[in-house]
Image 1 (cartoon, one colour):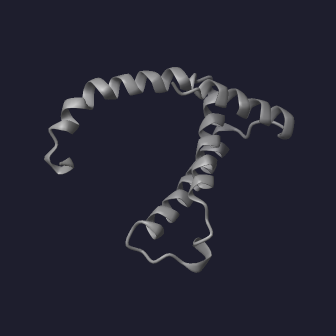
Image 2 (cartoon, helix red, strand yellow):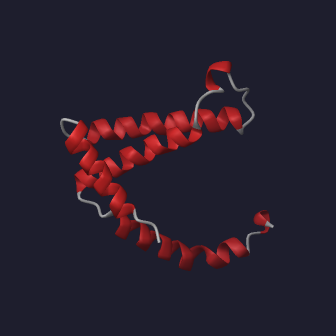
Image 3 (cartoon, one colour):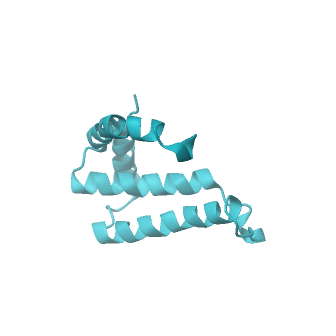
Length: 109
């Protein structure tokens, strides 16, 4: 079982100890978009067909994914979303809805 609730708490504690406050929701949404763009750039250049620029070769995909996760956790905290509960419900839904669909998908064989 994943412990997203602990991650939400850790982010909230970090904000209280090191930040002044949460950025507002719109600012965090813009930050999330920026961070996802950085992930997309690495994926497109490292795993896609674009050539990877020398300046991109030192970028750490894990670090960029962690940036995305941090902002998602901020957004969940400041909007009152229990991300653990939401994730668990989504995983259950996907397991029920998508199990046969994926097993029967010829493109995945």
